[in-house]
Length: 369
Image (cartoon, rainbow, N blue to C red; front, side):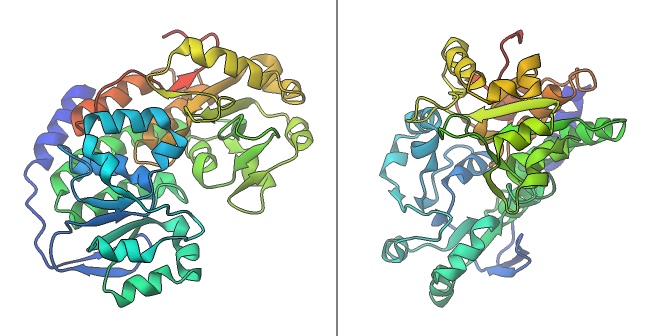
């Protein structure tokens, strides 16, 4: 039934026409932007948005990217290896070194003659405070804000639709968002039938710091936990979007489930999930992280209700897979029918030209794969 539904949706989306320019769009910051022509020189404030570009410019997601913040190279080395192997010219694109503090070399931006900058909504305050937005406005370079992190469940499909309109890829955008919203409906329908919420502690980038415990509030991974019906401890303890909380408080709140996230980085202490890694390589790191002093006293760690999930499912449009992994980890009986790994490969093979390389999307010691 699922294959028939997705195929039907894809056929329906194929009837969409091309974007007619000039076009006025309203971005996720509720600003109206007029694009007089199809953007051909795009800057990515957050380089992880290359995974969104892969849904739209399928033959080559880098074809209109003239500058970006290559976060994959810094935070997910296996993804960067996959991308540059598939599209070697990606190595020649200027790495602007954007960050959430708004630091950017504007001279390099101007030199690339950009006609659109795509930015994450969370970065807007920093871009304002450092004068980047004012400078780009004076140069008549539009900045379009999208969002997968502040409100991931609400804004991801909207962001892809917005990108599809802006970049003249509406049919490709709709094919993915139809799939995304169908899978999301399965999650929300099941969540509505839950009679009791499980309390969850999620530790993003576990092992990146010597100290536990870094976590997210209502945004990021915390937002995804809440989207599938979990009660996120970080939302109760953090005054801001993310930060460290006292391990003693986590222990005292007796979570039902403990989840760690990770990706292959230059720091070997981080849980090395993602592309072209083996489960055998994940196992010793996972064990070491669960045996950290204090962490080993958290109730679900002692009870064996601890698992890992690929970190970068929270900050790009494939976060529907992150939600499915979380749902199965938090409510294994209620979400037993979910197949997040199969859904992930469906996204890659049906909606992108990314290599369908082996990937470890989640990890639990006793899981069967």
